[in-house]
Image (cartoon, rainbow, N blue to C red; front, top):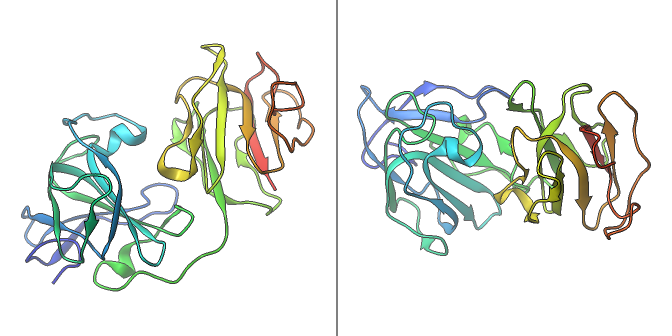
Length: 258
């Protein structure tokens, strides 16, 4: 039986591929539809409803209707493209409880369940080993990633303080995800700072619009300018030009956090 489909056996239609499809797409055996159940007990931390089939959508819109649950061990599971959602944010659910019904909302080719497992820092990991098994132990690393506005996809996760950076020199960044950090970015096209976001429940940015400023609370960070070089490290957040990383009017193509 399945830990994510009610009274059904998993049939994977699209497997996990790192940095390409960091999830598994699942249907009931013989390509049937089925109600979706909570993999493990936990709290519903994010719900999106009211979405229709929308090929080509990106970001959270691409998930369509979805449910995200934080479990007692700190890991998360996410269930996307749902036709129906039976829970709301803040609900406490038990393992096996019906939380929705699979569908094709968002960027979906046919009816199925898009299932993700995320570690304690909200970074997607391969969910395949956990379709019928308990979630893994805690991963204490912090990760972040950037959205490439030219290639139009999220670039690979990199670990904080790893001497790596998130970005692709020459291609402006349109969004940033980061674990546990409160952050915001300056939209170069609109000319103003976008709202603050916290951890990976949302990203900082406006996909498609280049970023020319970044602020990250309680971190040391720097950015790389498109066609330029790395700017100095920043370790504070304020309204001065030392309180953010970037130069207004100059697109950023990479960020490093340490």
